[in-house]
Length: 457
Figure 1 (cartoon, rainbow, N blue to C red):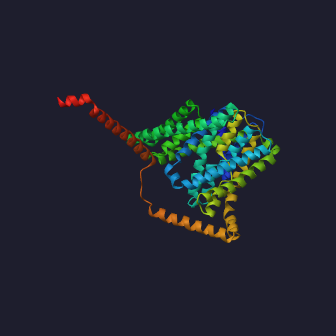
Figure 2 (cartoon, rainbow, N blue to C red):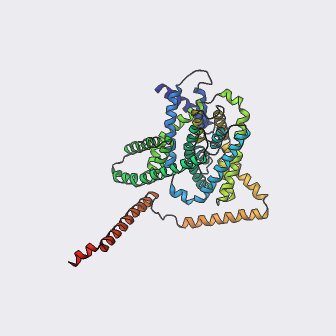
Figure 3 (cartoon, one colour):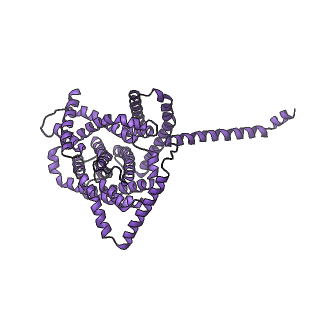
């Protein structure tokens, strides 16, 4: 296993460095490294696939745990309308688009459903990296885009659970689906509320003794404990890791944990992407190149269209909406995970996996260039818009600018965290219930005739 890890890391490091020098996304370098060490290119087994798969599965857990750590309920509420309408438009639109493409390609219902799920999720890692490298991390659209990506990650985790259930039963039943969603929502609510009540309090008690070493060990222990809990409840391990990340995100140690997890996340994320590349057969890319181009075109056109429309409906300016849509033009880690799930359960066509990975590589490569086209595209639309549309664009710009000014006036007023609000609500519920019980108990004692006669004596 040490030999396998050595081959993976040294190859990934060298190839990633080359891609960095060429100013290309490092993620592409990891996938290419996987192709180089994989069994398909040179016909030699340089590493044991089972060991790589084990490391890759661990990498998925840590990546999802870190994504959960970035989940801030307070931030989502601040951009709630944009996030909710934007993610609903993108996910529903892309799933319908993807399912239609699958049926048009004469895929069966199961394959079309998995394809639709793979195409509706942009890559949080790639989008944020592209935005950062473009120097746009402080741009106005980034806040809404980040919230949409977080909601997409949540939906992706839910889709993993639902697709697993549908694939195992090999049927799509509306009643069963609703029941599964209900059980999942209830389980998540219980986990989150119980976790919010216990873990922040626990961390507050032991905070004086929490050095970096103990904090990271304790956090990973809680993560793996929730993974085991999720598996015991019949859900995916990914759901458990993501949920614990969400819970720890509401503690005062969240940023510290996120900082400590960053190197570990980078290492295991690299292993995961290398394991993805190892499953690609270069000869299949040549065989399926028309399908790869079609899927890539569907991703780019669909994400630009539904991303822009969804953010505009959500209240963003047209320019910010287009910046968001143009930055979402790729698929990434969750698409790979869903594709791997379909292959593992033997419910998807073997050709889908290399097509999806190749389309992801192509769209990731094009993302920085497509993002640069957002501003010229906006200028073209604005300059050629009808007077009525131009007036609506200008009014939206004024409305958003005014809202920003009002929000800036209220900056600095730190309110209670989401964890404190939940704790307060639950405590108040318990206290209220106790008071009501005491009231009725007292009333029943006063109404008891025996008590009255004893009082008269």
